[in-house]
Amino acid sequence: MPDGLEGRHEDDGCKPNASDNAQLLPMVKAVERNVGNTPEVVLADAGYRCEQTFVTLEQSGIDALVALGREGIAAIKLDAQCSPASVRMAQKLNTEAGKARYRRRKVIPEPVFGWIKHVLGFKRFSLRGLHKVTAEWNLVCLAVNLKRMHVLTRPT
View 1 (cartoon, rainbow, N blue to C red):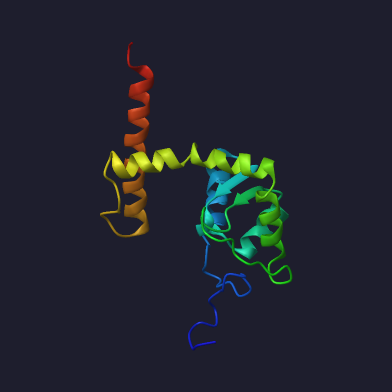
View 2: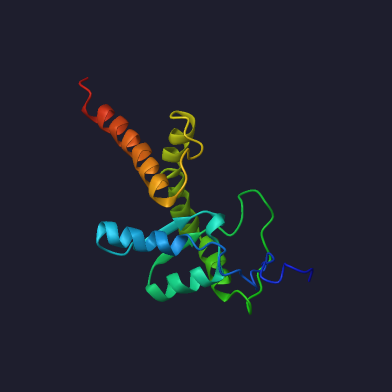
């Protein structure tokens, strides 16, 4: 393997870098803190695919449906010895129930992000630093929620 790529993972997921896809579990913990309980189901796109994350979610009793690749792109090759949790995820996603449940992702978060990007024109953060980015994101979320409230309360 070329120098500097020892920690990188190939499509089989055998050598995940510890920092790869490290966002999904902290988001689950944030939901737990904000809502008061652990989510029962997690839906995520292929950007969150990580063997160790799948194992941790399984051990936590969280039913996760995480895409293993992009729709319309050839399926990735999984090694059952290196990536048993990814193989289980693929099996779950290939069932009719798994496909139906994952399709719900298209109508839950995706329209909101599309609206944020295309209607509000928010495509990148203007500020730097976690505290400032958090404040900027909260402002964007406030705008989305105000728009929703306006539509809900508008007299007909």
